[in-house]
Length: 472
Image (cartoon, rainbow, N blue to C red; front, side, top):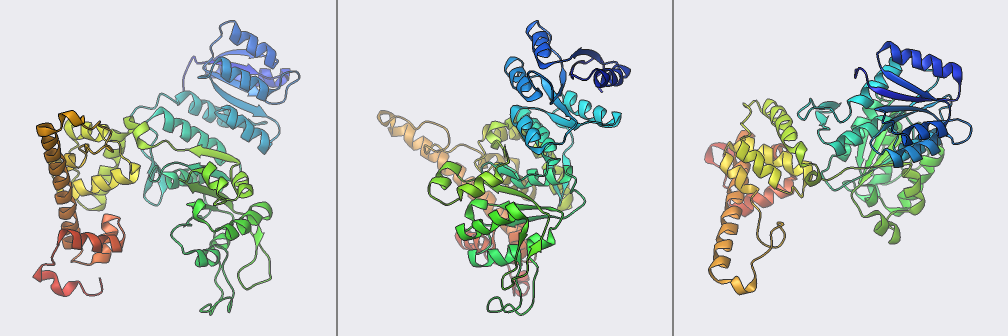
């Protein structure tokens, strides 16, 4: 708890004002009160700079939302918690979009108020390197940068409002981890969380995967099978890569969002479900809407609230935390001692732009853990001077020897990376007794990609394992 923090309490009900003020002063907060939005804004104009504002939504004159909007313009960094006697979803969403940190419904217990205040006042003061937040299925949410702490705060707020949420961001930025965090923080936390990758399931099978089918619905349907929506009743479903869903299926999904009921393939019976839908995509939304790749009505239904995950290159202060947390978990998973993250390696990691974001970082760390060679690991991260690595190419007038030297460095970096990748594949194959499917899973690449790389690097199976590769 942050003692002696300054709190501005704004409420038009004198009894409520006295009650909350008493609760706050018990914990040694410095409390000032205002009965209207106008009075609160005047205090801000006169120089008051509170650490936190508790702001009632329903007030005469300027209401709480309008006061919040003006307050954010005057003091963008001031944290605001909205208070209301009505749990109005539209007002909650509007308050979140205007920048409120949280929302409390009156009457509330002192413990609820304490928890919200502690959360708000601790934001921005979380030490870099704080513990990762376990969100299930061996995944962790790490908020070690201002951008990610803001995302964490918004996720906590939207988790308690039962609306669809659209998660945007480049591939590998952690949209599934964020979805798991929202589920964990929601009232549905004790229920099922399911993910469906709309890009990984063939279009003709995706409908039956989501909604199930009856016997005889199509060739090979010999028995009834429930879909993901039935299995996830009362829980949360993440529709990943929503932009890859066929338009016809998007129309059916829209009806589920509107009415919360559907029919299995081959059935006329209506099944009613209560499922919270989270959707994720890395597509260009305006372009997808313009080309009809994404239905406009579905987009606006899913877009009740949007969370945009920044790429890793925009939150590089998190890289040391991510590396240390991931190294500990991976070493434990592979029953190996964790390897040191030297200042030189950390510097190389923070200089690199990570186009593949968290997914690329985890795969890089996995190769380093398997190979155990810091120099090879660092060589992977050297910039390529081909116009795509963030470094300008040499001028044409300076070609000559400089160009040759640059080519030599590029060749050396590529050679080191290929050597590291090839060795990582060899070790994974050795570790799995040359079971290529298990090795692909260990390396987190597809089976086809592994076969291609085995051919690319000319990796030959050793005689001692010749008999063990059958069926792999």
